Length: 430
Length: 117
Image (cartoon, rainbow over the protein chains, first blue to last red):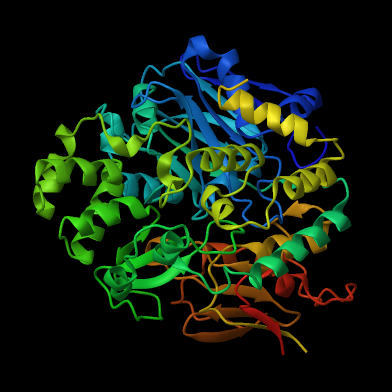
């Protein structure tokens, strides 16, 4: 596979410590396109070895607006279904540029390990120094140990290590889009984290046409209905969700986008610092990045102040437990004090509605959207590598346009018929 | 004429960095860009943009612009951002002089944080 790809699949056996590599067969791309089309196919191939499959889309890491998404596919311990979670912020593209298009992680390590994925190499390293650390401390440790603050980390905290069914995989310091308990799977495999660093290069089959089309899309989106939208609260309203802007805005420092995503869907709040501060804070950990609207809505409904709600989310991110599940179970139990919520983390168990019933993480289910339309849009985004929230907000990114771009970029004839087949297959409707 | 950056508007989406890399390599890559958002002070949410010009390294910080002349001694008490380390080795901004429609970083920025002055 020559274009928009590194042409490499890593097969990592945590049990034996063996790492093998395969080429990304062009025929596989013609049949499955990419993203969850191929992670699902790799999952099926290694199903007996309980795999977690990490993969990128053909458009991930390109100039197509919203091209932030990589995905993880595995069997959710919360729903029992083979499911997919988004890998966003900058972690998705760091994987894309790491020298691999897909990585199958199978088996269970004998003792705690972490994976270091960089420059077309995967290392399995001893995790003695990071096992037992919370998510923030583990991210700090890896970045300091490797001497690179730009390493992106997919990792777990104490929730995943201790087998909590609500453990989530975090991205660096923050909650990601994993509502399906993949953090529990990391813990079961004795896998503390995956460190990602991408310094690769992706060739484009028709570079000038591809880039001109991307620039035209950026221009259209910038002048369209999303113009000026920013932050997690406005994003929720745009998608028909509850309006929490007045409640949260006094804490907001700035808004932050996932890679090449025109609308910043994340908001950083300062909890121990003046949100109006422009200079670099002298406080080491002044706040946190909000990436998921759902726990905020629940905690607001429970009567928490915005600051207490954000403190809950910060503690969840450190512990590596899904904040939406914590909010839901706390509401059911009538637990409203911050300290009591944090104390309850080790005992919390499902089932939880926050895991949803779809094979796609309900992280991107905001507002009362038509279920079939939402599923279709998620599937297409997860196949091609487009931010799943941004895709819901952007009518300009039509399926035909995305397929055109994927074909331009790869020189492969990728048709609507193929996309329909892959969507049906991934959704279990073929 | 030069690139002007409003560091406060930047959302660190890296579109400018990717577009610049494309301008250099005719492929998608991030290692040769002369414009990069800060990404190394994540826990403090300290975001801005760095630009390498012919004689200077421009840091468009949220609180304002700082211009460091290349070759001049820097304040040893100032911590260099992780994103800044390889910048001095890169080619300086040429304003995408081969393109009729102007610098790619401006065209691709979704929040109009970059302009020509």
